[in-house]
Image (tube, rainbow, N blue to C red; front, side):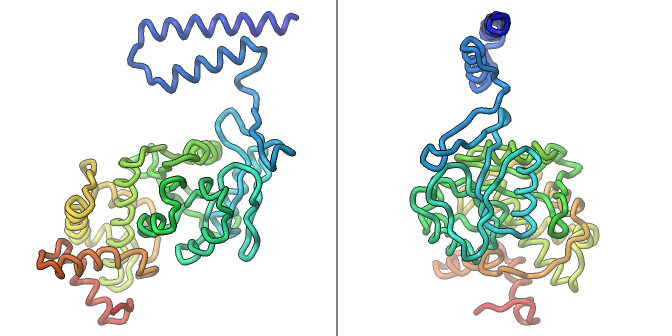
Length: 341
């Protein structure tokens, strides 16, 4: 009885605070107001809003615990550095995630996010193996390069969750190092889609950063990271295989030149609107991972994107919007650093 009385008093106090907030802070985000209203309702019903709740999984025969922070048990495809790090984060929060290794089946029953932590070349097989009822739960986590058109071709783009990962795991079992920079102390890792809040909750619960963005905001950030890896890898190879940090410190003029060309290309060809300071942000990230080596890997997912646009424009008699990139890429091919027709 005393507990019920206390909960009722808490509900009245919270409702009073909510009313005051609506009267004196009309600009307060609707999501906050909705959360406050839900919390007061839970208190009135004798439930604590800080307790873990449950959502149905495995056809209702078991329950999936979801923390008040928004994290929950999930399925992780891939047991490498990234997949293992995600599982350890969940374990630290009391969740028993399911890890699916190469050749194993993705559970058809249940709910919750399905983190895909594989390399790009393995994505098609993962999507094909995913039960149709679960494809909306796919979370594409940390793939480098441009995968948007591929996901659309596979008919999983609209309903899936996408995550830009700005963090590093040095070796299997190590804790991730956040890729925060001197220009972006709030972090650059970002998520969008159905399970974006869960992704953010898991990362934040482990002391890492994650920004939840809408689709347009995310696309701009995604293309920024794509510019980063294509620019720094190509320039590093061009200048003799130097590190990312050496590219930034010794060849910043080249970085700015290439990034500005790519930025203009994306504005023209894809209609992307970027925030000011793109080259500066990318250089700041390079400083935070200065020890990273450079190499032209996963060509079909990375630098080929720009070459395809150049060739398509040339076929229409239009100018090359990324001539500096084209020049260095062709030289890299001639030098044997990358292969393409």
